Length: 89
Image 1 (cartoon, one colour):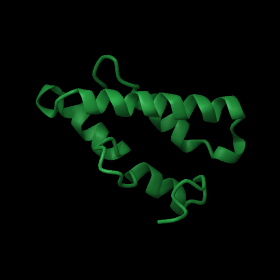
Image 2 (cartoon, one colour; image 1 turned 180 degrees about the vertical axis):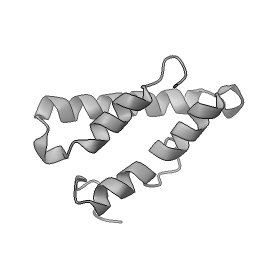
Image 3 (spheres, rainbow, N blue to C red; image 1 turned 90 degrees about the vertical axis):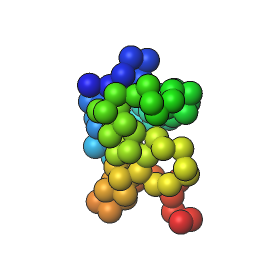
């Protein structure tokens, strides 16, 4: 279970599993905004105040804010479902 004021893990997984090519512009924009808001919340919340499950979820989703590709993004890109945002790496 994610901490309060954070995007739920089921929402993250759901948006990750649907290919960007099958999403409407509104869905893609919503995913982008939710992801940015969750990243800001992750940055603002000290690690010492995060639950163990939230720490694991942040690690899996790449919310460590070190500009590294998340494990979910790596898996999505490996299956050809990723966008072009990481194509320069």
